[in-house]
Image (tube, protein in one colour):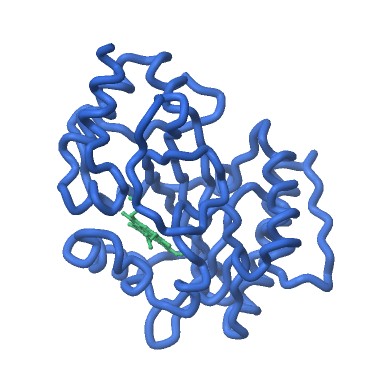
Length: 271
Ligand code: HEM
């Protein structure tokens, strides 16, 4: 369907807020594609120019970040042996790890609760890392409508029982009025105008418990494709997208910046 987006998490039954966890094989933890060089170059530029925006660390995350780096190097050696895995030993391990893969990386450590204590996020989907560092899962998700009632309890329970030998992945998607990977500003404007200017953005997220430090690693791999390309390539895509936009509750439409998008999109597609 699209070279750029590997996953289309739309469901003919309409919008659903769900954890949607699936078991993750170790060999599929890291995903590599043709955009690797370009995305790693973008990371290098962001790490040089906007380090405070794309990296945040607390001392309590240092040991777990070092373990994460070892895990990533080991994973690349085993499952992607042709890729480089040399690192600069002077660099913070989460930054060194982040330079090796297209994924964004987050480390959570349990103190009073699970807290985000180290992260390298070059490709945020309209949220600010500086605002989230040090906070709990519930605090991170405050802007997400219905998270509190529907996802908080199962997500916190999952974190308590996550085992190193059983990892998971899940998908999130949205529509944005920009194809840029680096979007650190939390605006909620709705896409309008031409279909070519809209992007379908998918995040493949993984959750793993590290065995030595017991920390939890959350990875985010972001895929972006022009909505025009996707709508032209598949009729089911357009129908499922319209249905999802139509069935998402108004609070979610506001949060995602989707208000009015359904009608606008339908009129474009039918013209
Ligand atoms: C099973 C685990 C998790 C679930 C079910 C979950 C669920 C969600 C959902 C439904 C959203 C709304 C985004 C959208 O639909 O576009 C969201 C946003 C977000 N999630 Fe999670 N999430 C999980 C784990 C995490 C973890 C471990 C982090 C750690 C960094 C995280 C960070 C965020 C952030 C930063 C946002 C954006 C919040 C904002 O708009 O300010 N999530 N999450």
